[in-house]
Picture: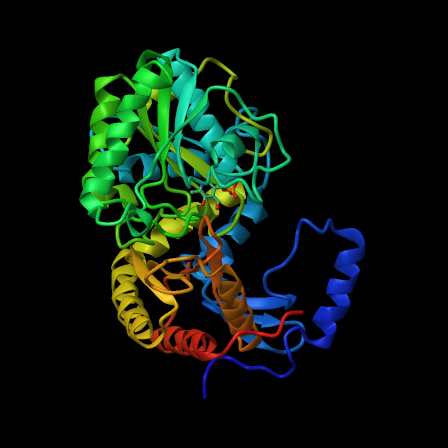
Length: 447
Ligand SMILES: Cc1ncc(COP(=O)(O)O)c(C=O)c1O
């Protein structure tokens, strides 16, 4: 017997009733991907209020590397709550914040002294990384990349490059944000090799200092080592090292946004390790505290020390319960060998997705690193026209059959896996069977 249990259609009657109440009091912008209201969760399984069990390969959008309901994380949070749960670190400090800063400072790549500051969300950490970079360099400008996603607050939204649904109608945007091309080899000009695509993008990055913004005005380049929301786009090996070298030459700080790639998902603790790049600052969130609101800027002590007294902070930032959760997450990643497990899961998933590619002409590309893997769906492999409608159909069919995958991609035609790294092989295989069947199913009738 498999892990998926479907006692009712998805959504079941209790979910439907709660979703109806939601509709009355929650803004429509907060639409839900899975219309099953959660009752409890453990590992990679989510149980809904109608008694259904789904396999969750979305992991709360990549927050649950250690799995839903991880006991060690739960115990660490409970122990912290029993002591105290809020002071504001800058009013009365506490050890879990300091211990976590020590831990992360020792983990991020690169030589030299490191420090860490904590925030609540990925967007907030991205914005603060830019503040640190501006304070250190005395320069105003920021370079972000096509396809980049950095969050929904003003500066992070400005740095994000997908217009719909993230930006359209929400201007005016923050000034001094410039955009460089990010290599997307699958959609590069015909005949262009991935290496040439990476080189062309890096050349364009440097050319911007002539055509667009003076290098001496640029504080930082903020880059996802593998783009997440854009559809798990892996740059060719030479791209990031060249961006790092150009930045170094011009005194521009390199900020790696590892919010989605971080903490083991790609088969390395940090994705930038795959490329031999040590950024000046690393931004973390999501799996850092297993979904508790916590994000971090970790990196060069001289950069983080450049911001003046009280210029950085926030009432809730670095909450002690979230810090306790993050310390337990770091322990669990080591104890369970999750970085290695990501490699093994990745090999298993990739092999299966490649078999699916042989069977389903709609799969244009299988890509990613470690367990951060995705498929891009196209109308046909020659034209590579994005198959967004088909992608939505497949994802919906998967949900109705008890397996949760997520959508991504600039064109909304990528299916990505952000599974808990503790997912047992049998549950993974079962969910991938569902995906395979959903790809085989014909188009759904239009609603
Ligand atoms: C790479 C990256 N940066 C930043 C963010 C924003 O994080 P948050 O939603 O916690 O603000 C995300 C969220 O998906 C992300 O994937």
